[in-house]
Amino acid sequence: MPRVGLPVDISRILPHGSIVGADGETGRENEDSQGTGAMSPVSHEPPQTPGEAELPAGTVTFLFTDIVGSTRLWENEPGAMARSLVLHDETLHAAFGHHGGVVFSAMGDGMAVAFCSAAGAARAALQAQRALMAAPWPTQTGALKVRMGLHTDEAVPRDGQYAGQPLNRCARLMAAAHGGQIVMSDATQALMRSQLPDGATLLDLGGHRLRDVAERMRVFQIVHPDLLCAFPALVSLDAIPNNLPIQLTELVGRQAELAEAEQLLTRTRLLTILAPGGAGKTRLAIQAAADIAAGFSDGVFFISLADIRSNLDIIQVIGESLGLALSSDEDVKAQLLTYLAGKCQLLVFDNFEHLLAGAPLVTGILQAARRSGWW
Image 1 (cartoon, one colour):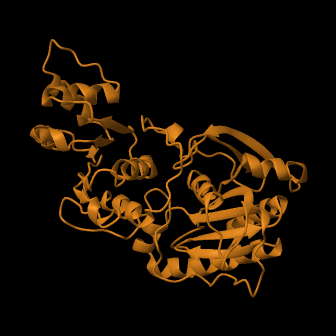
Image 2 (tube, helix red, strand yellow):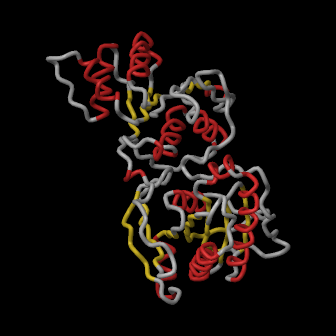
Image 3 (cartoon, helix red, strand yellow):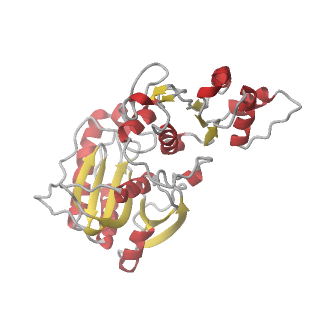
């Protein structure tokens, strides 16, 4: 069902506030609806510490993994899923360690691994996927579907961890993939193309807009006879109808507030972000909308009301943002509601505060468009 947004007091989020849903709830727990991986009820095997394996520095290839559909498995088969997670961890640690990978972070159902060699990272990913397909999984869960993303960049660990843009890009790349798929950035493929594992080829998936990445990223898939090779289109912003403004910089900080907003939108159809001017409400809303866009099959749309002075113009602006031509010969509100009634969309309204008399329109849309969400 398309969801609409709730009121969120960003002044309690940015920098002195929190996000509140329409029912007054606050949220911190992440959902797995976008495949980002929910926190599991049991802990991972601890990653290696720098004392056990030295983290590579300089040109580093990062490999991020995530189990697709884990939330449903934890809900329906918690005991079997706990056993499957142990098998998953053992399988991945063996494959990654064999090729020199160092697991530097393991949260929820995913791992973050660093390699000093792009070719070694690719071989590790291929070995891991083969091993996952052959593993003796509990019948209740079946084989876990794990997606993997590889990205190479310059990085230097500090205090046993990495930080910054390379991690964000690798995470976003991995999140665009499907269970069983291995994807990599152009930077990684350039380093390892001449050292492909036996039988492996690279499939150019083209350029994609990934969430919170300023420029388009060219993506490649590892293809091998032992792996699944046919997958749906990547879950990138290109695959989802949207008019979200392109952000020239990546979002820095606000991760807790971002996670809270995204989690609240899994439980409500209306979310409002409140904060003083300049606190970053718009940037946070755009980022959260991009992060959860895959949950709205008919698209995510940004509707700016900053230049609107009359409530009568709100409907027209909504129509223009959606690419909907409204006829002046008929009731424009009725046309809009009829259009939205069957849609699964997320609408992000910016600068609504000076048009509060238009609030009944929001109520009307919520009542008529049962599958749409507002923010």
